[in-house]
Image (tube, rainbow, N blue to C red):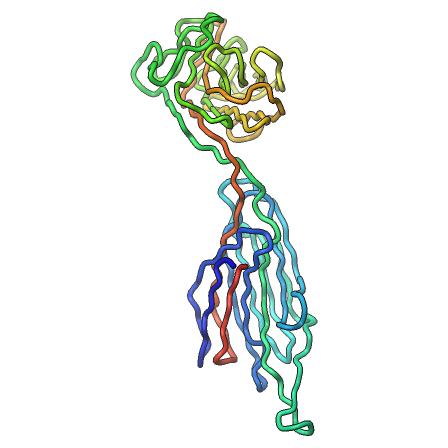
Length: 379
């Protein structure tokens, strides 16, 4: 049982404060229980508001009504959807219910991110009628036995696993000129291929000298599931190139690389590739639009290799050639007039997280009864 709360209402209607529950697992139920009728002709009513946030992934809700001992709750409305952001989306469930003679009436509304996804009327919902019993023997007039009405918000599915990116190493390259890059943070890379060290010049990472190939590998340790990204600062022509690597080695003999071939001028003329180093291209995208300030990220999680531009997935492929290594950055050019430059290198670990849903339920009004509890539960 998760987040069970009991609020006792004695002698008067209540205006209960909000209380927090957690319904982050499929099958968990958030419900409000109120009396359906007293021994007389009471007409109990209540208003309830449940607010919370659903996590990334797919989600679903069932809204149910039931009376105790009347069998399984009956679903009166269902809503499903998809949320692919890592921040989650807010939801609100509102119900205004009254009960006369065992028949509830009222309205409900479920909104996600301020958009109604399920709403309707509760009128004449077919609940089992109230049983009766003799008051003073078999010939006496009958009176109604107190029973209760439950309104449930049942989480049916939430939160397909999504990726969480944790930063383990960063270098903005926004500092005084530096040639080569600080060896405490950056090691030599691809020297057998003739790569020189990168430098910092005018607050950006640039080639060691005009034209050629320069690169450096992170000295920080990276887990097997890793990511790295760079921000384009200059990339003037198709002969001006920027690269970011994951799971690579200092010799540039293994791993995966994301290659961005200019120009970064807003026209559909750039080329983007994801390559298994020394083996093959996993995918190639031509006639792509690249702009100054675009952020390119390469991710290796398990056997899935993915590339992103400004947070938007460009493509994914499956490959098991290399399981571990570190991150690196590289620049190349054969165009004297259009030298490449990047800033804001970041990299780290990538892991799965399960989406969740949390909820606060507030009882705003309950009338027409005394001495009976109002219960919320999310088990």
